[in-house]
Length: 153
Image 1: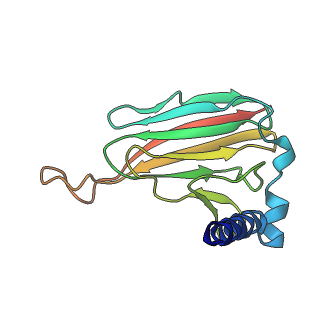
Image 2 (image 1 turned 120 degrees about the vertical axis):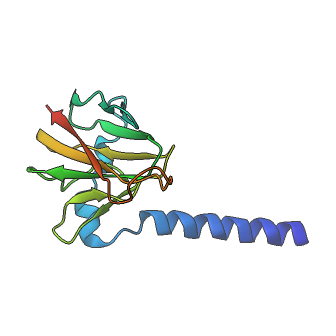
């Protein structure tokens, strides 16, 4: 009898989790378009500690998820400059919507990823900023920036 109760509880938890995942605020539902997801393979961009972004310029089709891998030795943050990303086709990873309605990344820890599925055609310039690793030989106020570009056709 207890096994049956446990199964019912687990099923309830799964249903609640599914409802929570699908329960975006109404304004965010307009920004995320799942019907475009998984139509094209993802594009991987590496953020390097010594050399910047590889590749720095990427051309993708609408509906492509771009994944940024933080290969640097410090947390980094991505920010779009100029044309902003205001729509995505599935749940972004390590991105939030700022007060202007545009996507901006959280701090992406070393060895982690951020991803964003591009919907709108255009050219999206971005900068990735890397702060100090905290090592004693580095100046703590040193911030390096590297620029990249995503072109969505």
